[in-house]
Length: 417
Image (cartoon, rainbow, N blue to C red):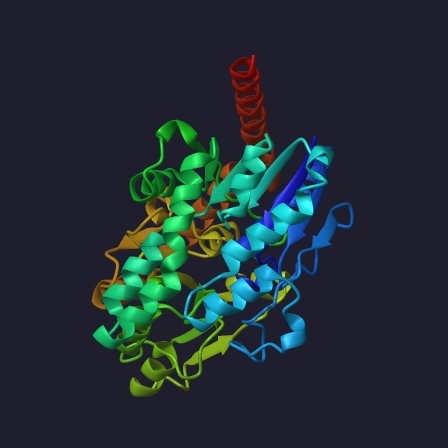
């Protein structure tokens, strides 16, 4: 099968979407399929050499080290560039829309080279142009961004809410586009149900295909550092619940010698940094970002407990990576997390720092229970979460997308008679 995989940003360190593109594309070529990734910036850096990359350049207005930069006039080479800059000036996040428009333009003369086009949660209006031309199309919704918007608005001051509403103005577009696409992949049953509810989708559109993990890389690795906790939060946002974890660490350090290894793109002037300073945790909280896969796997495997304090997760790949490393997990009973971990982790109510501290304390005091949970988590990862099985299930969804496109073409042919 010839597959075009679209992703508006695909660097692995930008979060789970980049990891998804890299591993899914590799799993697909392992099964003998032909895969070409079409990506906006930041581009993926470590695709399988059998996977082709077509760069879809944007203005890259959020690039490091100068996010929210002002582009030079010579960079505005067409109407989509002007649209991207204009929307950004108004405070909107334009990348999903403008990437989809650029990708549709690139595929205008290449669509027949592919059996199916798979969009990784841009859900921009450009995809509708592909549908109108009869292109078989599937999309992945890791989780509806409406959930992020609700949590961010609830945590914001009234002054900030107006700008947040503008930033999230792309969400209604994603809902409208998702309703038009015949095949929507979700990474968990919970996130599928949330997408049906928030985006008003037909349950018949949904295909649940979980994310996978490299169980050879993310594996137990010998002795663990006493008192070490680890947490991974790709974004410094309220949805990740890190401030509640910091409150729990402050409680724990009164009776335990603990350290928190926090993997996050931390905003030095954001709420997490301020909470670390306010609680006086600078000596026990160590923040890192941009780790290699090997570095992340080693860090997770070195911890005695993995903490996942999120207020919502559509899946949570770091949680599965911890299970695969045999690292005991304490997670919030939120979103898809209970589905992901099953009975092989400790669950607490989201936002409850006291309960989180108590659960971690109990595990630190019971090495036998840590060993039991770690072994159970490792078994779960091996049995449920491999990228080969993910790729196979994704191809089944592609077959449904191709069938749906054939049906649309047949209906149009009959209507034209």
